[in-house]
Length: 116
Image 1 (cartoon, rainbow, N blue to C red):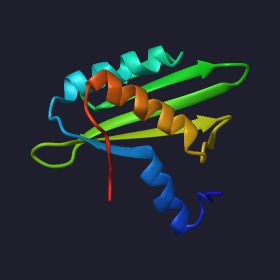
Image 2: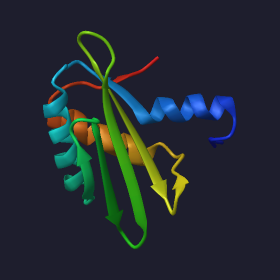
Image 3: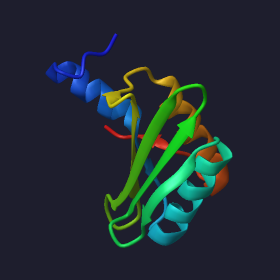
C-alpha cells in the first residue's frame, strides 16, 4: 500500500503516474489525451494546450478527477503525468493509471516506457 506522505510512497506513486513517450508532438499528444479521457467516460473540464494540461471528471456513482500534464523530457520524448483524485484525496492504487496509460498508448500507437 502506498502512503503519499513517505518519500518511498512519493517515488512509487510518481512511477505509476508517469510515462515517457517517443514523440515530440505535444499538441497531438494533448489532443489524444482528451480523446482518451473521453473514451474512459471522463468529461473534460479544462484543457490548456499552452500549459500542456488537461483535466476531466468521471461520475461513476462517485466523482473521480484526473489531471494530465505533458512536458518535454528530452529532444525525442515527452513525459505524460496523470494525477487522479477521489473526493480530493489522491488515488494511490495503480489500476486507474494503468487503464489510462494503456488506452493512451494504444491511441498514440506508441509504447509507453516507465520513467526511471
